[in-house]
Amino acid sequence: MQVPFLDLRRAGPELDTALTAAFERVLKSGRYIMGPEVDAFEAKCAAFIGVKHAIGVSSGTDALLAVLMALEIGPGDEVIVPTYTFFATAGVVWRLGATPIFVDVDPRDFNVTAKNIAAALTERTKAIVPVHLFGQCADISAIEAVAGGIPVIEDAAQAIGSELRGTMAGALGLAGCFSFFPAKNLGALGDAGLITTNDDALAERIRRLRAHGSKPKYHHAIVGGNFRIDALQAALLNVKLDRLHEATERRRANARFYGEALTPYAGLAPTESADRRHVYNQYVIQTGERDRVQAHLRDRGVATAVYYPRPLHQQPCFASLEPGPLPVSERLARETLALPIFPELTSAERSHVAQVLREALGAPA
Ligand SMILES: *Cc1c(COP(=O)(O)O)cnc(C)c1O
Image 1 (cartoon, rainbow, N blue to C red):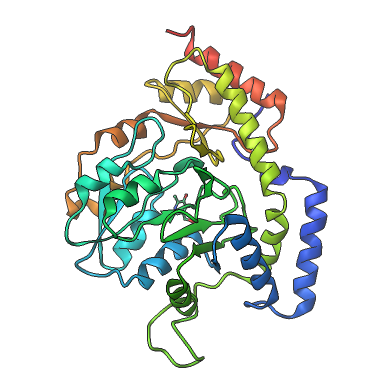
Image 2 (image 1 turned 30 degrees about the vertical axis):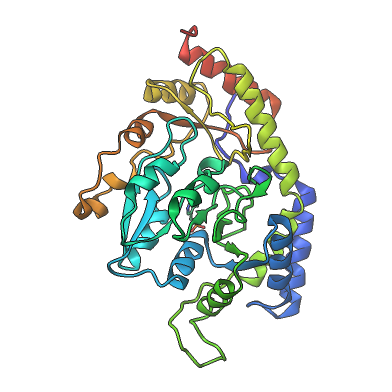
């Protein structure tokens, strides 16, 4: 049996029909930038996440960039970020001329801890960007408790619908940044992103930055960029947002299945904290024999992926910062492996994955 890591074409004819209708509506409207489709998507996202403001943008990367620009982060400033994350979290800091300060993560839930952040704070720290990695919230309340008023910006790119103590990702910090890259839990048919906040002044500033900082048109008191979401992507995402809850429940069911199958292997399966709702953008196991296990799965038809093979503090582009060592993340980069978890995975496929994985691991210790 061949099991793909992710298959975006499986969502089926019902979704295709609804997406095609949305496409035709936008096509015939002649309105391709901003307008009612964007307004409707933003309103629906704000209600879903439980925030005052939801601002559609061009990508998850641009969401992070625009928020840091709104906070006037620049040369001489430090921004604390996890080293074990996707590149964009730190890339945007560097692009603004500020310094990413890399911190290590918790070995069980892969997220930055308040303790590690507290140790990295200096008088130059201007923002903290925890990542809700793989779809489980970092403990934003604990991080805010040590932050002493420094803005905490959630990188919620992998975590739409995820919760910490009943509050959704994106409603926890000063602002939340989401990605609708196709492989994320809510995926566009291209690039798109979202910023959430309850802060009126910040929202106003971000909306202005989204269109070159202009207000009114052709008057620029600040410099922004083109960070707009396409009306077409907003219309398509509107359709998919209606189906997100069900898709997330299927991811969670797949995770429960793997969790039960892997119970005998202590420390292998990812954990869900009792006070969170994990949305499993990725299902990431850890094993000291990662490369051998991955090769065995590949030979038996199961596609997997490694997130992330190299922590950011070890990326050549950041060598001048002389960061590290950050031992937990360095070990995770060698030992983590993501299994297929997408909502349309069949029960035969996930059984095959679990069986082949047990074969690779041998009898539990
Ligand atoms: C995907 C992702 C981003 C970037 O989102 P894009 O929409 O691809 O620009 C940022 N941070 C994290 C943690 C991500 O997973």
